[in-house]
Image (cartoon, rainbow, N blue to C red; front, side, top):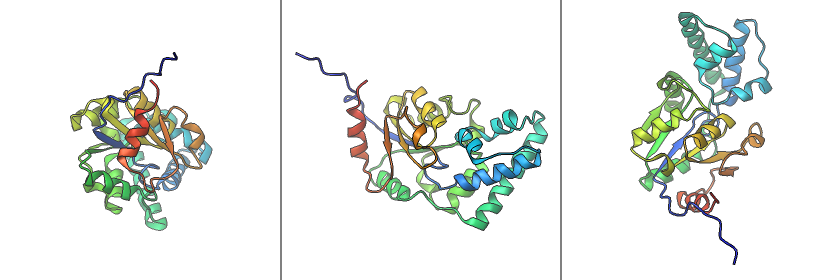
Length: 231
């Protein structure tokens, strides 16, 4: 008789942790254009293909490692300039919630599921964006880029969110859209649902589940699918 593969059916998923840019908010284009302007300030070019691998990396790390800004005061000014550029672009182009993400968040809150936002973006940018789309109040816990020492793909940001929610990591589900975020979730021993896009769909192979849309998504159905995945 064939042995059945071990599954995670005994796990009880208790909380959901969301990435922000590209997962909840359609901000990738605006963020790219803001970084592109900042890179130009330092006589560096940035194409969209160059930008994609930066998704999920803390702004501090981008400025430090890719723009090679080692002076702390100069780095602070550069990141402040980047936020100004981002705000100007958003004011010009607008910013929207990823389709049906707000419906899914409301569904989770109606079912009393604790929610955390874990974003590599700095807190000032996060607050501006989330208030603009009226989603900030739904989250019980928020962890921003400057709240951690080690950015994605390190697991620190997700582990901190789980700790603040008082939920064990293995009982959390992470929603991400970037390869670095998926790796961080898996490094945190969490299940990861990846939202595929035309930019990142082929980079999400490590996710436990890949979805194309939040439309009609139900928490119970996601849990059932994740529990059936072989260990």
